[in-house]
Every structure is written in C-alpha cells, then in structure tokens.
Length: 221
Image 1 (spheres, rainbow, N blue to C red):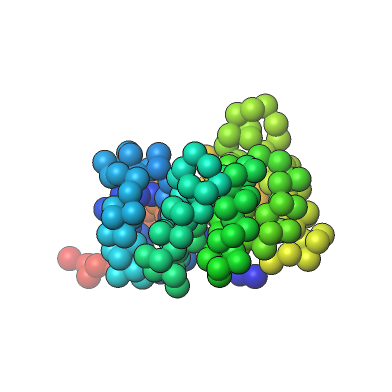
Image 2: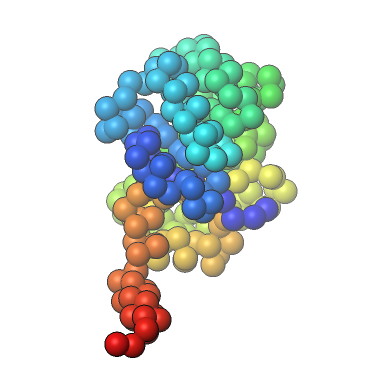
C-alpha cells in the first residue's frame, strides 16, 4: 500500500484550490458536508459533483448512500455507483442494514467504504465482506473519552493481522499532529478537512522562511 490523502469537502471551491496540486487521491463527502455546501443529497446533485471532481483530477470520490433500510441503501448505492464506476466508492454505515447492502453491492463489483467506525472489532466486518475502505472517526472517538489514536492503531493491526487489503481511512482528524502520529504508526489513508489542509501547507514558520528566500533572491538596489 501507499499513502492516500483525500479532501473531505463537498464544496467545489475547495476542490478547485487543492486538487490541481496532485496532493489528493480523491474526495470524500457525506450528507452533512453536502448540506453545508448548500447542495441536496440527490443522485442528480452528486452526478454533477462527480463530473466536476473527475475534471479536476480526482481518482476517487466517496459518495454516501442514504435510506431507511438495507434495500434502500442498496438501491441508492447502485444509483451512485453508476455515475462513474471507475471513480465512485459508495459509503455505507457499518450497521446491519449497511452490511447487508454492502454485501450485495460488492457482489456487483461496486467499491464500498464503510463509515462511522468506532471500534477495532468493526474492521472484521469490513474485511470479511471485502470492503475497500473503513473510516473511523478519530475526533469523535476522542470526544467519547477514549484514546482515539490507540483505537485507530488497533484497527490497523486487526486489518494487518487477518491479511486484508482493506484500507483504514482515518476521518475526523483535528490537528496535523494526528496525521503525523498515525502515519508514524503505519496508517496510510486519511481524509482531511480544508482547515487541516491549510494548517499542513501554510505553517507560519515555513511561510516566513519562504518570504526570506524571495527577498534574498531580489537584485540588490
């Protein structure tokens, strides 16, 4: 495996700013992010977003299915996957209904990302079904009073222990130190919200040093 970074935003203005850099493998979205961007959770809306993301160079876009049953998740997931089968990964919650829908979608060759993972044991469900990704919410695990870093590292160990190709897609990072700490422990897949991208690429001391270099490069006079 190799490092994969995703941009966690449904706001295309963020995509246009960051995707051309080549830093990001793709984009992750969910209904909450769509609402923040003033967009509807509809197949038509997500089709337009996917086409724009593809045009900006995203190799994957993770779109979350919605519904009140396994059948509804499955139908929605099918519709989302057909938007762009080469790029779309269908996101499903790692629940009973979500796992039932995932199994059927995976049998069709649809790529699946399990989301809202909070415990290392859930990696066994994702690995057994053959999902492509499973996304733990680091910040929310910490908010619940648990050691989120230890839990996410334990998830990676479970995946490695069973020899699965499942990627642990770490979401809800709050600080760049979360990224470096988990990467140092062997995690290779992360989704970053725009504020974290800003913090990663615009470190104050680095900006000062860059300005000093520019000043030194100017002709004297």
